Amino acid sequence: MLSLKKSSPLLFGFLVAAVLSLPARGQTLPVEPPSLVAVVGGTLIDGTGRSPVPDTTLLIEDGRIRQIGRRGEVPIPVGAQVIQADGKYLIPGLIDVHVHYNAPFLHRLYLAHGVTTVRDVGTSLERILTLREEIARGNILAPRLFATGGSINTRSLRAAGVSAREMTERLAKAGVDGIKVTGYNEEELKDILEVAHAHGLLVFGHTRLDPGALRAIEIGIDGIEHVTDVLEDCVEENPPFPPDFDWSNRDHFFRHYYSQLHSAVNRDKLDEIIQLMVQNDVYLDPTLVNYNRGFVQRNTAKLAADPAFRYMPEEYDRSNRYGEYGSGDREQWTKTFALMQEATYKFFKAGGFLLMGTDSQAAAPDGALPGSSMHEELEFFVGAGLTPMEVLQTATFNNAKVMNQDKDLGTLETGKYADLIILDANPLENISNTQKIHLVIKDGLVLDPQALLREHIRQYGERGMP
Image (cartoon, rainbow, N blue to C red; front, side, top):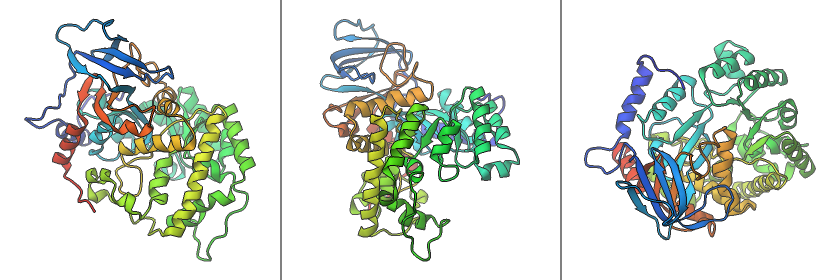
């Protein structure tokens, strides 16, 4: 962890946020977890892939799972907080491995939706490591945080006046949890990988068209964020563009290029890249929800009526950044989104290591929203062909393992952190039941999701509904 030996304006700002994140007088949210908690009677879906176990008792002590057994087999110590979970279902806390933690109002939104751990992939180094430290110390009620610091690309290297090797060394020594890359040439990627791997860190991020997914995999990248980066490298001939097409215009790019990937991708090349990823242990984090919300659902009544907007401050609204979409735009994007799901399932069935991230941030409404979009991503994975059990494992165990945290997180097993969700309905019957959250437990701290959302509105206000 980053050592904080003295205060600074940045730290003071986060400490203020920490104070504001705590419940106001008269609220029922605890800020210190009870030493003992017993969850009694629920059906355990532990995240390992084992069959659900009904009528269990899960005993938590000092923030970790001390014992799991059938009801009556686990003695409940005197003084323990007992949660009756008859008829309910226990799953591990969700982990979102692709977020941009760029606003203080995000804290409760993730927790209220059962996202107990996140990996930030792009916030500035000092800011995110300070936040990570304050959360770890218990000064801020927020999801457990892992971070890469700012991503390495041509612009960040030029701004810092350093080489790719020097930037990677700087990030590694600062204590990041991985290296995010978004732009590089082949030699730079080789240098980044050499330095990062020497520090035991994975390198992941974008591949884009230069050098492309295939060469990045051959050079040794550890993971690819966004399934579109794989698909782009399977385009042998660009789709027809309008006369005024401008690659640097983001609206043009998404409207006329990405939307047409369904007709431009060579499926044989896609299979080739997927096989190479599997052979080289390169993970895939598709981030489906961000594309669906941003483009398939763009300018629709369904998106406008999303109740999650209630919790998003209007000053973060960037909904006009890609222009208005009509039925024709959405029709093309619907086909491309189906291809994204197809590629996701192909990768999974080939034996690839699949992750789940949303690309969520403090932007509304045309993108992934903090917390709620994780549940949409679960549904999109099921829509791609995975079973609910496989999807839950991806969002918990796989995400913990890629961050080298599977000894502490990702499954509900003895000795691990007590991060879990108590659901009112069975997610294996319908994955949308992950949204029926009764309680969230993080580090043994029992949280009422509705109370978290009420506190969020009390502090940040409520967005006017359309």
